[in-house]
Image 1 (cartoon, rainbow, N blue to C red):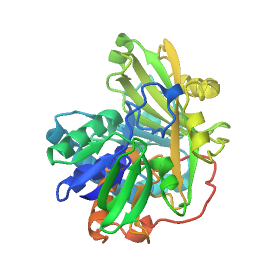
Image 2: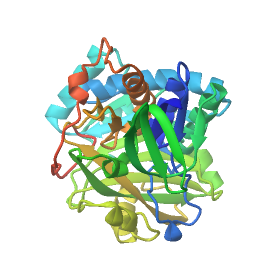
Image 3: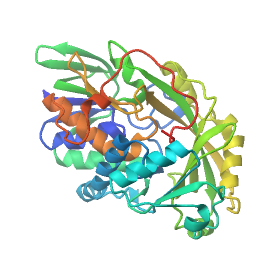
Image 4: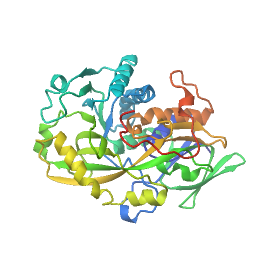
Length: 400
């Protein structure tokens, strides 16, 4: 009998595993990355990736604080695990909406986030390969903002948690049912795990394990990987991560991750974008259909157009698309809450959670183990789970 079972071994669940293991017996249950995506019939995840942006700066103070706490933990996790996953190359945020600019400026000041604010000519002179509108506003945040490798971050969380005697079961939970001493979790492999408490952190698939669905919506996001050679990567070695809110009929915003070598051995600049007309995914079947190879290929033309407009003199030698799942919540913040049935939930990243996952996992682990929200800076009411359904606004996911 474990003190806690965590369902979902993505970025949030893996962070919760490390934090819970510091004071309790814990098992994390989640499938490995599929070896053959076309043959995979279980849940997918969006952390099957090598590049994500990390930054403190955000227009919402809760997200900024979650990110700051997480970034402060990066060197701790790397030291505990011996696995490096963080590149502090800095971050550039380009936008032209007065309300968003005001919000970013206010949060940066309130939380003492070191940013420079100005026009491209003032702040981007050392990035001659980047083309953005002259009259727009640039926020430039130095390291430790930059990029993370989510696969390596999860490996680091797992290794650190195992050194604290946590268990990791590579399996898929089918059902959770109350028992005399807590909960029984039944898996696809036919195993039963027993725990006093349960934390569900299964991302877009979390509602499948709840008796009453929470108010989330799942959007299909497409990512383009622009391949470059070693010489071009060397030329762009100082490139920061970039977020650009667009004035574009097809994309609401894009984010760029500087050159990173992926498991196939190739170097890519990654760009993801929020499509204004992306249809919502209603169930696990449509989610899994979207995550199949080639499903995002019809978005390649617009993604390639925007990426080459932003980096007009970069020599791309190949292109790939990748699908991604974005789980939005009605509040715009992750649901971190203990439900009436005693199960704790932690999911709904709204496209912001990778960089902030360690802090989200820490809050969730504490809540699951103690039943209380004791945070002095964050109000638990902001993260309360909401039931039902909702339809998110179409447009940018970085603009709120």
